[in-house]
Amino acid sequence: MKHVDSFYVGVSAFFIGIILTELLFVTLQPSNIWADLLYQVPILIGLGWGGCWHVFPEIWRLSDGARDAPSLKKLDRFSGIALISVMVLYAGPLDVENVATWVFNVAVRFPSLVPLVGAAVILAALFCVGIVAIVSRRIPYPVYPRLRGWSLRGRIKAASFWLLFAGSWIMTFRQFVFIGFVVFLGAAVVRLADTVGGDKVASLTRAKGVSSAPPLRLETGEVSFERRLAIGKRASDMILRRHGKKILAVCMWGPSAADTEDSVSYVDLVAVVKAGQESIPDKKFVYDGIELAIIYWPESAFIARAREMDESWPAYRSRYSNLRVIYERDGWTRHVQSALVESDKADATEAIRTAALDMVRHVGILRDDLRKSDASEVKADCSELASSSLNLLLLLNHRPYPAGDFWKSISEMPSQPADLHRLFDLADADVPVSQEEMVAAALKLTDEMLEMVRLRGIAIEESDLVV
Image (cartoon, rainbow, N blue to C red):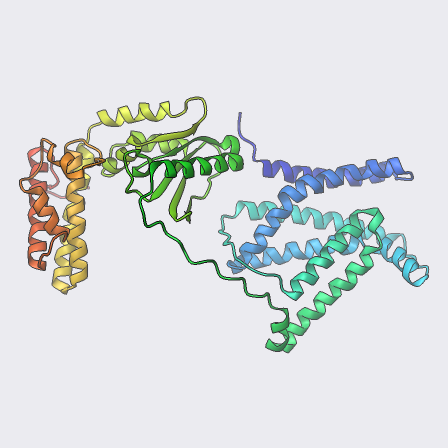
């Protein structure tokens, strides 16, 4: 069954509620309390569920996004005009008559055409708000959260909005409408004063500065596996509460998932998202002194990455090897294990070829930086060649990045260059070394790795151009 986005269901309820309200008003011509209640049911459902849960939050998101995207300001302004039109016209003729009688004891009656025109404009404005919400939803734009206080003008506008809303939609509070209009006009006066008066008035209406966050606290000691696992489980519970059935599995992976590692001071989580769902932004932040990274990965991409054999295979295979399941639905991770079996049997020829060509490119970059006499870039280039040589070595031996004693695992590999450890330390500047020694070690390491590729029968050079 095809997934239906709840947002569009909510917007549909919003539109249907508006249409049914108009039809019931024409059909019933409410004249008693029951007919009046029945007449208001569709609009209350449409605005309550479709509006408050879907349409209005999207309009709020548009307002936030428009602060950083000038191209959205016209759309944001249009939705604001439509909302104000709804408030003013709904609370308009009838409420002005009632308020005038209540406050000034003056009978005011508008022509019968005024309420009809107002109802037509309200209907059009509500439809415009719904359409703007749909347009905003279909435009991919980021919204950057900001810490902000409440300015005087903002407080007045918020107060006027709620007074107008209460007076418009709750019959008992109809007299609030007049007060809301007065407060709204007060906000307009403050805005005008800000514009005309400049900094003198703006200083009175500007939001107070938000207190700065406390100093960043980073963990300096060992982080036990039990502590990392506890953080992972707590994050998993929050992920499931927020995203529910969209999530197929939540796992720790990589070095942070190994129960033998106490020198890892971060937590990597992957949450697998069911196919057909909207993408969920990744999260990365410091929690309780520890970096926590949460990746939301579509299930098809997660399985494909587990199955794929390419130049990144050693690093990813190592992460999948340490996959620690915190939550899974219906044993979903068995599919991951099947994909890993396929990748372990896959031919690594093309991955080796690509990794070898990457080393050739880095040699060219190193020579360019030597000609420029850029010492810092030369050091970075040599370090990159050292890391690339290890990655190529792992591919040649069809091994993932080893856990635990790294060099012990490397030394046990059947195929490797002579004096690998010493050349790596020199190229990576892990020991005191001159630039000449560092470059010589990096180039010698590269030559030996490329020779291993050649002896494997994998060609990276063509005698003619091939397109």
